[in-house]
Length: 188
Image (cartoon, rainbow, N blue to C red):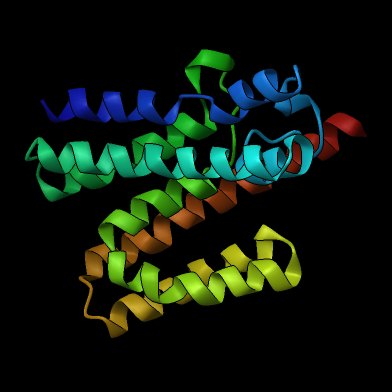
């Protein structure tokens, strides 16, 4: 049964929110405009604030849903964490649109909001203020993901979840690195 929920988590993550929004709002493939990423930040810039915020919320909900379903199914803790990873992989490599998705930032935020709620809520306001000040998700997410292990430790979160809170954003960073490298090589 754990494998079934893990596979389901991948498919939940693979729902191509930004791609669907691009076609609904502007009739475009979001992966061919702006920074060519399927995530919320590109949707915000290319499709408008309403579409971008909605894409971000739904992408976060995909990660949260994967973890909540796994918890509701009574899966052991490591399987719940695997479901979170599967949903990020689904978002980043969605089977429905040729395995070319987003970076997994919003999906990761949704997962971590469920698993380490209090530290995420503590960091929400400063992260949001950095987002407003810098007008960029990169410094805001860098702050969030760097500060999260420290705040989690301060709040007495288990070492496993602190490590997970480091590993999941690392997956996002690795995805971002390879996407940028691939894009540079493609445009060279």
